[in-house]
Length: 440
Image (cartoon, rainbow, N blue to C red):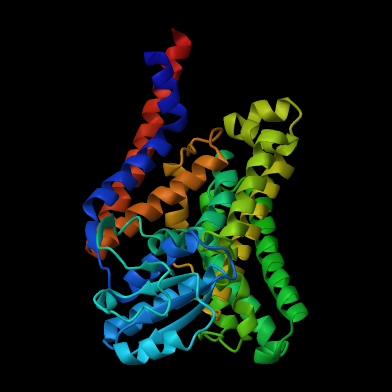
């Protein structure tokens, strides 16, 4: 039993840590959630929508107070997101009574603000169920909006972390991903601006994005060649490329933000779709991130090239003697990392509807921290794509939880530094324990 527990914690310890962190922040952010205002409207609308069919009609009944107006607007939007037909009836009791009586087709439900609980005006539709919000205890951390916000915020870091995982497994490092992200965002915005600015069409936006990603891929290719052909340490090569890419981004944009982009360009970074019946909005960029992780997991576990990456990280010389094309695999790893950084830059430009050379500052540190926390060893040869996603979530959840609990920005830096140190320390202790077990 102890051996099984030890094996489980060795393989899935970070998932347990993520669960414990989520449980802690759920506990410390437990509060009575308001029944009024927009939060009350969204919550009640979500509960009502879960029991209805898309296309059903719902009346939102609200009084004249400011919090009633906010309640009604939030409830209406939430109902419409769930595919329901919502109509707001707001005002004094006589006005709402007249509007209800004038409706010959009864709705499927009446969604009422707290101030209408004592109203005696619903005799025109006595059989229609009425729903009122109930104040209840619930963690701020586990609010649907907060969880979606976490998922939204990790997308760019998570995509960069896929490429960083490949590089670190080969015993390398790539410090240029943050600058490549900025360069990609600037290049994408510049290409679109020259291709029509606000009037640019879909083809222009696609080609501009692909061109920016390809540019980053060329820089990654150059880094890989420098590392393999001239045996320059990856730290030095990618540090140089970090400065070069940042310099190009600043010169290309004249140190300014490029923001003359068409509104449609924000589709990838801001748009989403609502799951029928649940009313849960999933951003497209989150779906893209999950698809990339699924593809990367299959690549690393089911392809020859993925196994070669692990082999090089375990022992480059042994891999070479075994027939692994070490040079080509390393060049591929650095190129793939740069291409993913370019994709992250396109996403960030889409989110912010602009490209600026200041994007991605210190991203490389957060990305490396997420990869290491996710269980990828800086010594190379071991790591999982799924573990990297867990590492990204751990970093994001901790930062989000600290924001919710009011911890200042400086203290957050201390915590992040300690997390990185503990992750590396645990990796070293795990390696020693596994080596001791092999000897025994």
